[in-house]
Length: 125
Image (tube, rainbow, N blue to C red):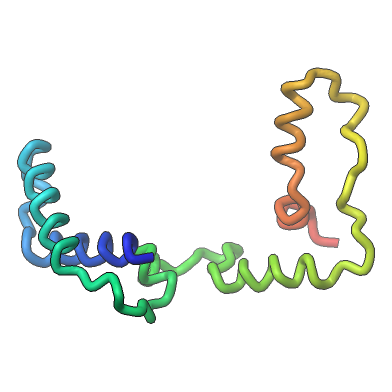
């Protein structure tokens, strides 16, 4: 989390102190970014406790989700309730689908067969 906080500080510092950032060429951007990163990392107190919300650390505090998209806290609550509310575990399969013969396709199917994603994509009803 300290790394995310350092990144947040660097981005804020670049936006405030260097408004000409977009007009700079790639070499000077790299040089300036390295200088700012070293300065912030040297002066950063790693022993501090971060009391910032996760939305602010990852830079999405100003973004409002569009209709139908859940926020991070709602998604976390949904995942917790998904596993807590099941009386029977109907989502477990003991064998792969017999229609999928190719080993690579079976592997990909196992990757995509996530009960939470399936419940989000399923139609209401």
